[in-house]
Length: 183
Image 1 (tube, rainbow, N blue to C red):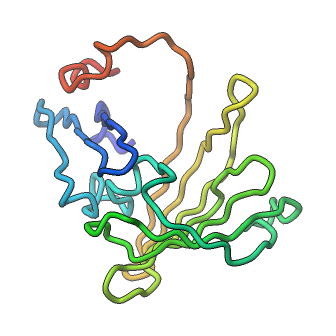
Image 2: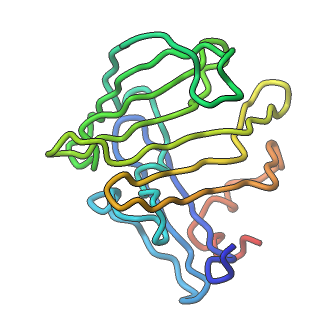
């Protein structure tokens, strides 16, 4: 939901050091749109998420600096310890100058990210990740991701109702043409 985005599909080809290749299928237009690497800081579907926020988080895409250890954010998670790490995007076209990331010390799940605007280095957005589920006894996936834009006061919440791993896709499922067939 909302209804006007039903049937939208996104395909991302991950690269370790280069910007990811991204395509978006828009059912209302019945076409696949390629997301330019220069436009990755643009809004995803009018939300507070940017395309860059939905890209892979390969280790090589950032430089890192540990800042401190503290309890993970959120009233329900105060018993979980987190590392707070500053990571700076290597890509000069990133919309962010830096990010503060809360990772739990046991499973290395991301619980919170503060995004700082490039140029001004002011707090732009905060992502909060909750409701983790473990799949196949080893992969943790969040069910809820909430983004708050501190400049506009707007919020977007992404909720996954069904997540399945190892469903048997083949190479033909990972093409821009296949985006039109996603249900």
